[in-house]
Length: 134
Ligand SMILES: C[C@@H](C(=O)O)C(=O)SCCNC(=O)CCNC(=O)[C@H](O)C(C)(C)COP(=O)(O)OP(=O)(O)OC[C@H]1O[C@@H](n2cnc3c(N)ncnc32)[C@H](O)[C@@H]1OP(=O)(O)O
Ligand SMILES: [Co+2]
Image (cartoon, rainbow, N blue to C red; front, side):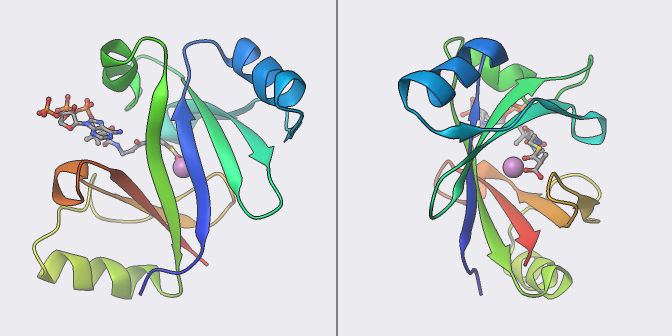
């Protein structure tokens, strides 16, 4: 059911410093910061030849990554995003298998203008999973 790895997201305490690290020290192509108010994060995309890295920083008072950063003050890998051909079919199949789909279970439009959903990390080996419509 899951397809390509779309991105790996890293929560960071300082977006500017993270962009300098990836754009300068690691020599990758990085985007400008993009506010995603509906997701409570500001993101910078790092373009790699075979996938992307998403650098995440909290935006607003109710950011879903605030707790994670409080527990991991120097940052850390926050989620992996897999592409699926049919996000509603994937959601229904996962729900039927007992996995917890986060939020109200309805896909939101993600950073790549496609529908996304999140799956509870405790149901997937301690890893938060994002599904993105391919
Ligand atoms: C823009 C978009 C895109 O790419 O298109 C994005 O990615 S937006 C990316 C940001 N959006 C999201 O992440 C949306 C979905 N995420 C959420 O709803 C939340 O982050 C939760 C996954 C529910 C976690 O929230 P929070 O940390 O406040 O909850 P909590 O303190 O109750 O945590 C419950 C347990 O899960 C663990 N936990 C929390 N976040 C985790 C993570 N990222 N990876 C692995 N484990 C994690 C905690 O340590 C805790 O374990 P213990 O109980 O053992 O202590
Ligand atoms: Co993401």
